[in-house]
Length: 378
Ligand SMILES: [Zn+2]
Ligand SMILES: [Zn+2]
Image 1: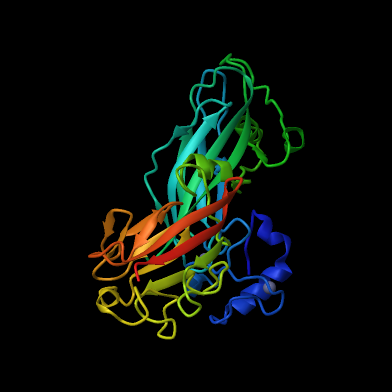
Image 2: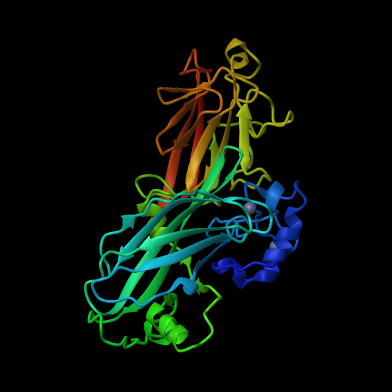
């Protein structure tokens, strides 16, 4: 596959390919070669991708950033710089990418959000935006940091990520009549991860008869997990994150009512709960007592699904009669983020008949285990 990856998943392409091969068998939960659990992308049916260590599918989320350097002109103290940014969806599997936010930070000032005239970028397509700086108050080397929030969607689900890109550019002194001195900075001096953009130099080369720079200047970018937290793109509002490999622990269920303790390794990434038995295809069988009494029959066969999305533990109501979480009634297709302390109540007309409480075990800011405890009145 022809992919440019910016994350740790590229570190071990051999493992990546054995797992990708194993994941083609939708009944497989673990790689048959290396034994690792298979965390398929939510859109695996379309992309065949697996999530990397950062819970991202590098097949679906494959963006390239560049500056259209052909549009360069000199930049001086007292002026502004328009960065001709091009965002390309480099996915080669036909998955659109959505740009959900763009922020610019100049010389450690506060971030400014930029309005984008587009959100959706089709695969292999590009979108352009001129990112304008504020007035450049002094000559010398300036730094601009861009944060770009992107999302990938599948059915009703959405995963969001934030990337950062750092650009260094020199600003010439004010004197409009004076020659541009073309301050030089290079990547070795500013360090890895930064891109040096020198529009004055490009303009000077062009005036001197050098062939115009046609190739866009590629910007390096990396995942910005702290920004994902700060901008509430991943995880809960309090900064806690639920990683895709979180272990679910089932308490108070009989062995034929719940899956083994462990992470969700089903191909769909979703566990289905309801009155139906596990033999009938449910992952969690919800009944009040032993048999199918009247209260149990009021629970939909498929009542809700559970899955991890954008660093949060989510519940989606699937049954036509709905269910309650705490005191809130959810209708079919409604989703909500579950937090530690929440109580799922499957029997709407008798909420105390059956409950599943949710408790998080947290290490640093990551949820390591989610304890789901069933209690029934019978
Ligand atoms: Zn493997
Ligand atoms: Zn994918």
